[in-house]
Length: 338
Image 1 (cartoon, rainbow, N blue to C red):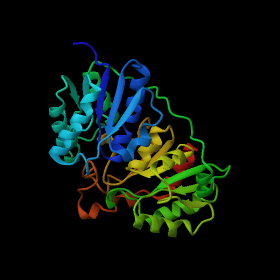
Image 2: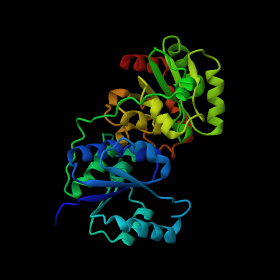
Image 3: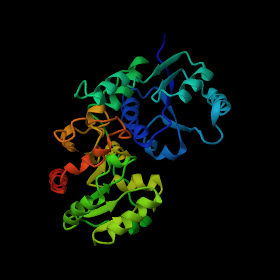
Image 4: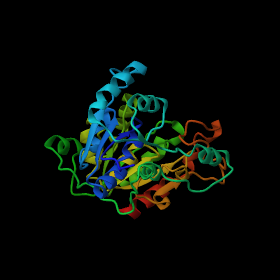
């Protein structure tokens, strides 16, 4: 069977998982420039792919026009015009499987999520590094005949900041630290009162930008930033495109096991990540980073870590396991990479 000339790559959510496709697709487009890629994802995630060569993005409106089985059928009709030779399904969910059946493309490869290994990890049967998400993505392309080397990545240059972004970030000549203290689950979030201690020390020497999402997060970050001169809350003030611009200009990102760390990593920004009931062994280490960049909760006190892959399941007494990481450990780690 001949090698594909145009591949449909499917990854519809979530933010961190979609962003982690980028270094793999970038490496692919650099190593196989003769092959065209179309990424199927939500419009919100378009900024992640903006600098990739030979890559176009097609948006799936899974909550509107392409909702449900009839919506997926409509989506398949829209996609058939591109005459894809192959599908690389980096999601492997019901929606992507239904879509594939509608498209009837002969060459097809799908991510192996390693569920059995991850179950062994969270059950305590094993405690070792599993394959990274990026490697699992690369394996899908290898099934289609394209071996990808992600060991020498290239990254985009820092984006020029517009007048609006310069005014909002108040960016100075000082080194700039991004801090994203929130995550999808409380068990993955470093307590704000402890993060306050971290910020109070770092703000003496560095410019700090706070990242977050929902209304509650914005309000909490406003209260936090109001205490310091060198700390700016940018949560709720930027589009994702603008946020990517700002992140590309950071010197380091301090994040939880969450999307902001992954976004920074795919832009070539150093990341220090803080882990609670999850653990980097599950494969979600920020791209191009080692375990040395991670601060993990004390497993001598909380031996069941990781209690789950995503942090959504844990014994109640493990909720604040992340607090076993001291503010000083975080401060020392951040300063060590600057």
